[in-house]
Image (cartoon, rainbow, N blue to C red; front, side, top):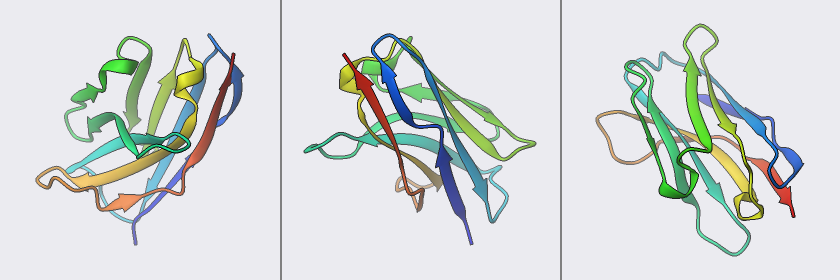
Length: 119
């Protein structure tokens, strides 16, 4: 059974940094795409970044380009989201997700980790 477990959230001041981790288990992820989404209070869940497990190809939403970096450690089966120059509008619950790279929908989701950026 696939499990995605996020960690690393917390409270940080604007301009600060956090690194989120997503520990993945339950299968081989070589043919998968891993992603981070976020959901701010009163808003729908939104895409943040994604990485293909095998090639490391990445994609970011415009609002985080140049500030966030998604990466993966194959040996640890872990995906990271390094968040720099954080802004209050980055405050949200951040979710890790996984899908087979040949599909559109994400099949697996973590429980989420709260990121709060104070001004």
